[in-house]
Image 1: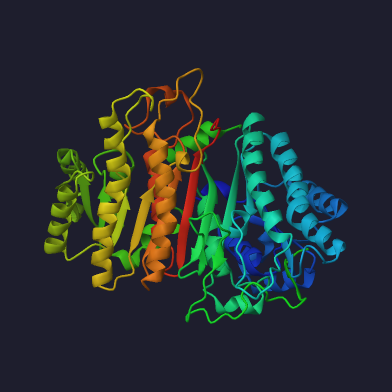
Image 2: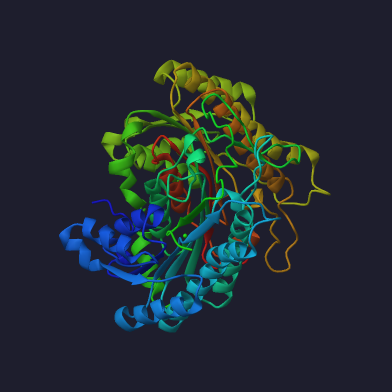
Length: 562
């Protein structure tokens, strides 16, 4: 029987702020259904009571209601005092409450600016402090989730002639991006096993989104709630650090020229003024002013791979008997993913130079599944080798529906002194190999009008350069250069696939240190992810509905020192 990964949270306490509508209400339903006791906080108590009445009779007792204004320290303290007295403390905190009101920062009421700031930033700090105190006192594992936004990472210009009316809102979301990393470091430094996760959706169909925005492609609250459930269901040593979700066809673009991002108008969007939609109207999301025992927990996850939200049985149906190509399938992440895709009913072509390893991998599968894994020799750094492999796939299997660009190369040494041939080889495999394979997969998907999926195995070093452990020399050389290139390719491909009117998704997966053959020896002393942890993240991204695109998923091991 496949598990959802939520068993360890059974009868534990989750607190959801801004639970009266939208993402908060949807997530409250899902958490209650998964067996948790949920304390729903909001100002609008009647909305919470209506939500509880909508639950099945046998679940209503697991939803507790408390009025709370997260901008008020007294209100937050009152709510959390009650939680500790009546329920013993909170194990999960979902910082969902947020506030948005249109206007220009240069002229709008300072009271309104202050209210947005207090809701979106200090409300998170107040609630997180109380949950941290409870978790630390009880020496228990916990999870803090922060509802961020794509505007917590970059800001968009309005169309010419429109006024910018997001004012302080993006500043508060950028603050949450910083708070996520600060909390991760503080939780680590306090020697806890508390996770923190930032969820950054694009436009979501909630009360908080003004009507003019609703002409654009939208995510649904369920899509964001599912992402949170995936993060909560990961094994104790796995921390989803950042998960960015976008609706397919989202018309936000990030230029490569250093300009501010903007909204691209198109016939599909039909938006005359997409970033000046407020006309003075207020929009809130409520809608609120919107250790010990870890060894036992780990043991439960070491014996089997856990796939949250039951992706094998429920969400992978559209990929049944479709063709997935996994590069670098002979070991590590590629091998772990190939096995899981086959078990999910997908036909898998494992590309590798060491093709005998893929053949051995096939022998490990149950007899009835072995025919679903095809081993094909391929060096992704050589264009002719890629062409030969993909020609075979198209001739024998009809084409490609999923491509996982997993092959990667790392030579240990210094950029200043190592042979240029080795540096060139890394560049060729890690960047040009992705281009070679993606071009062929894209051509196959476009010709057959397939809503396919391209996955790029990126790295933490695709976002920032990490210091080596201890007193070691920096030995990553060209590797972070190529992974920064993958980060850029992600957005280039998303824009191209959208501009060419396809329904092909592209996803970047950025793991921290993972136990694979590519890992330099100096890093073996650090906390690590397992290949199966990354495979589970990829399976989650593949299992999302057709309109949901996991843009960036960053996964770190608990206690990572970077």
